[in-house]
Length: 363
Image (cartoon, rainbow, N blue to C red; front, side):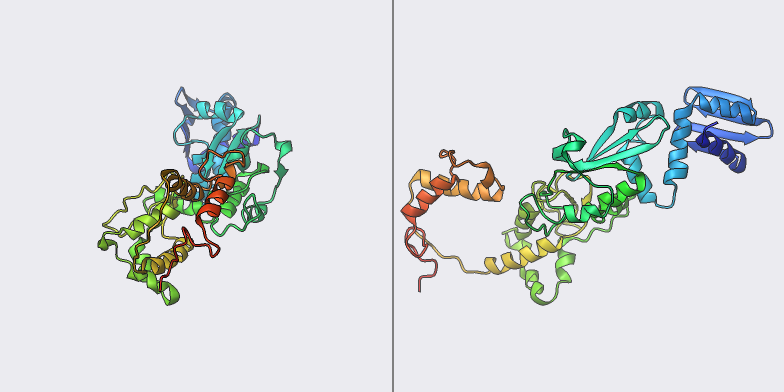
């Protein structure tokens, strides 16, 4: 008899009752009682119970995996692994049919695929979402969770990624055969604290620290941010959130607001896991923007054709949306095309780099 059935029978004998995902086995003086959503059998001997469980092997292997392989030592790991395969939403037979073909879910820019072999053992494939259809042989294979640290350090252009949850994770790699524990460790290496924060939010225990609280504890050179006042009508914090916390910039879902009573007007995004406080990148950028917003306004006069005005707007939009590399040299109808931009500079900028010859600081 399979080891998972032996373990289940022994657990029922020791504990009196074992129950999980629709399977219940109860031990009494009259023998064993086996219950599933479709079956109830009473007064079973030890041997008869084993035979009956063999007929419900998916339920038995499911119990063994969650009880003996995953266990209860880390509730957040267990909850995450069950979320990955939808264990709380689908019945065992339905889920096992799907697992044999592979169940997929996204976590930021990570794609997790969990599959089941003939013995009920799970294997996890982890890769970039953009590589969903790539053959494993086409990708660089890794097997140790710590390999994710290097993969998460630089973007596809080799530039350092200061924000580990930035939407610029490079692809081209795969962890093809992780077990349950290593999957969670690898995910956590890519996105530190994402699973614990997701779990705390799920349990209603996420400790969100809002903008006002975070700024209130800044000291030194960052204390200047405290001079920003959302009530002056400029809604600086909304601008910060729109600039930094959009789905296109960060894979977290922003849960922090201005304060506990005041929500920001900007949507927090659709990420699978939450952002519980303004990150260090937001704080650093806000310090710079605070100083820039402290400047007095001036009036500048330029003469532009309507097309030149629209082109300047196109350039700002393309840079803000990180689309510059998508605009080919031959795309001269694109406002942010390199040659069109060089032509605009040749026409409108003087030798000192002043737009239309107008100096920024007119003394």
